[in-house]
Amino acid sequence: MSDLEQTITRVHHAEWARVVAALTRRFGDLDLAEEAAAEAFATAVERWPADGVPPNPGAWLTTTANRKAIDRIRRESNREDKQKEARMGYDDPPEPLGVVDDDRLRLIFTCCHPALGVDARLALTLRMVGGLTVPEIARAFLVAESAMGQRITRAKSKIKAARIPYRVPSAEDLPARVSGVLAVLYLVFNEGYLATGPGTDPVRHDLTAEAIRLTRLIRVLLPDDGEVAGLLALMLLIEARRPARVSAGGELVALDEQDRGAWDAALIAEGHGLVRERLAAAAAGVAPGRYQILAAINAVHTSARDMRDTDWSQILALYDQLVRVDPSPIVALNRAVAVAELDGPEVALAAVDRLEPRLAGYHPFHATRADLLRRLGRSRESRAAYDQAIELAGNTAETAYLSRRRDQLGKVDRC
Image 1 (cartoon, rainbow, N blue to C red):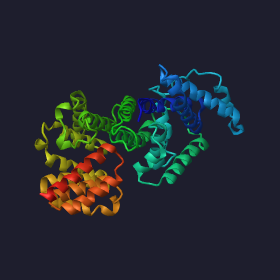
Image 2: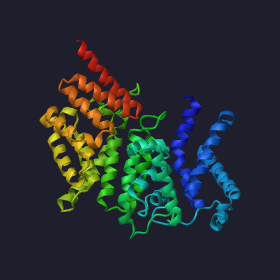
Image 3: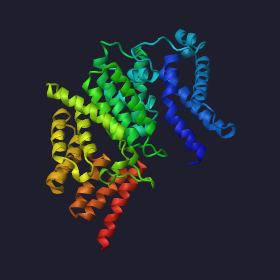
């Protein structure tokens, strides 16, 4: 990939949500916003190689996208909405509609409206706010691209038909709306932390930073909500490990091999503070939710100076608590990792194998099996599991890591 292509990719990551949100505010139409934004980026690909990258790429893209949107409205007879025509003549933003005035926050609440199904909310936000392509989102959901495209199209059509407003909800409506938004933000964060898109960086800091930024804004709106604080703590503690997450050669670095001195101490301190705050609330009788428990698990990991110092008993107890709140196969898979540290890989492998019918298309399942089989000396089975994990993994850094671990099995076999 050339330097210019890398620049355009970075600009797309940084500016997509801003451009789409600005167009949605002005024209009130998600389809129009997405189409015009895509056309603006396509124009950049055509013109920037000859004209050079503009000093303010975001402003250039927003201006170009606005012109593309206006051209579309004028061309298409079915876009003769009086409100849109009125908005074509000015660029001034409307008055703030909530406690926090932010176009992207309004966009995410629109995409996460309860009139939409949960899967539709997640997919639409990843497309409109995260800027992921339909194939990337389909991989995240383990569904076909055609099905995902239809899901996103139906979600946008429902927003238009139901006249869902583009705004941050009122104070009385916020608590009922926030859980769906938090689920979306966590998925956006996870996509950034281990990106699945081809040709992109293995870690997309723009997505993790945006997810953290939006979660901070929601915490301003709901400062006493435990799950908002828990999600923010979880993101901070995971983001703190990002500097040690990928090697200079582009390979994923597992937690037990990371340079803990490279972790961001300020983010860890902030995350630990939020976890202690929620532990105090739990002691007062407020039951913790999923994000608070996940944050506590990560607090235990980031408290250990060395992998050998990790309190696996505490981690397993927290996973036992999490299973009661979220009895999903993925939680059970992660719990098995802690079981392996306490009771050995054979006990853990038996627990993992019971999950196969539900996780056959989930690459961490095969990667976990591969590692447990490796630890048991079952190299041939381990190699087959690594092959499956590599085939399903969409992240270049993770693929490199899994390939190295698989190849190390070959060296052992030849000894």
